Length: 159
Image (cartoon, rainbow, N blue to C red; front, side, top):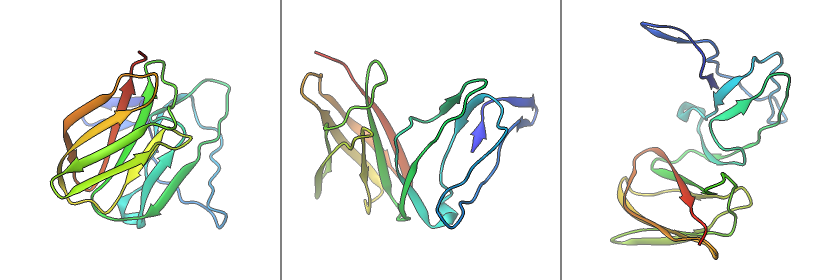
């Protein structure tokens, strides 16, 4: 977990930059965390990949507040893609058809309640993607680079 606040710039030192491990119940509680914008991730050395996060990354922790974040993980495999689908108002879009394809590969996954689709066991390389949902313009791209743990944020505009 890394905050966006820095102390100095040569070299850049982040005010908060910590690795945290979960307990036996697969949870961790952090107390007295300063307000900031935080990026959360899973170290590939942990043996897991981030498969879903209902809170968009990075997350904003406002002064005087607390929040719960749930990260869903799967055993690590090389060449994965986590697609986050949102509306132009930053609302998660569940039920979107997320099609990832290239020669020899064509898979469609419906985005979850968190607006995400996770593709695993891919071959590293460049893919095409099409994301569609009723009431929104379809998003397409032919330049999605997948290498190791990859992410893609897609914004769909209402019709």
